[in-house]
Length: 441
Figure 1: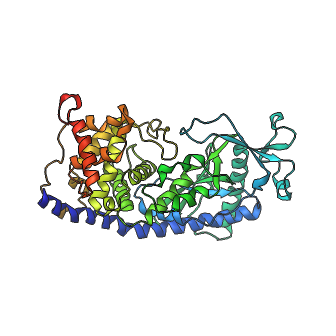
Figure 2: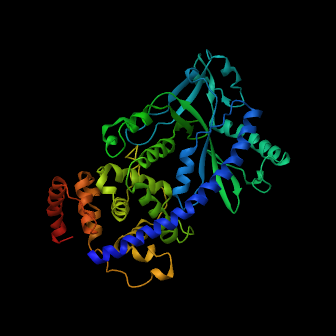
């Protein structure tokens, strides 16, 4: 096995190099497409100053460069509102851990002067609002106003030669329930942007304030992210909700500041997912968002820097969490763990599990990027029976802990940890699982 390991190390690094060599080009394509979009949004703002342009988008560019998959990118368009004049009414309390409660955004009659501009075109007036409420800001009305402004802005920017010919077409603008979707061409790549109206809210996000999030993230970064304003985005025609995408992208950015191969592991799995598990993006399957959630969980389950020091080991820390989620049919949302991100994804989890397990057992075939890398790969790392072991957290959530995942790493021959406490904790779990269903796992 030691010789096999030595052969594989360059393979992982070659694969990562191939992804990185495209990353710079992808970042440029993103920058060009985003510049076109910002030009359009600046004209939207000139037509209607209630819609602001958010230029603080470095994290989206950073995330785009990590990815191989071509999923739509979110662009938030903040609505200028006096936060103090907002009346936030939660609609039915969300179960703790189940997801953010939807809310209605009322506008106070006592509002400061800018609120007078919050005209009826975005307000829905109902008798439920009470005497102090002028009406509620309705996402459906905001989207309709924003769509008309965007169409006019696209036409204006094209006629005035403000954008590259062929980069924009107003016909590609689609209205969805919670966002508008627009295609922007950047050289040979076309990027779909989901344009999401957003309202800043001063309150933090209570679900994030549990201490367990502090493991595995840079000191102070979580506190900083939690204490920032929350972004409210459309949940339905009348309701808003806290945007967790916004939070999770910032958490990913915080992980990027740590030494080690966390983000490299994510990049590698996103590429393997796109090329192998989704047949070059032709088949339904996991999204970058799913894999990002897997990394966030892996970072809290494996908080020690030595877990991420070596590239192959970093990828396997993501793989054991992903395999466990596929085997149990449950990928918990990172901020609202009772919400299962796999439940409404419409995926064949069994077929997907088989593909991911095959990769984890013999990754070499998927990592070969050139004909010269062909040749006989090492034997499979695992035998049968690993799925029963992976399903344990479904029957006993106490298994969702570092020692259990250490056992899985050991199964895949990538444990490599010297810490004696971790080794003994892992061994005690191993002894418990050895008798699983009366047979060795």
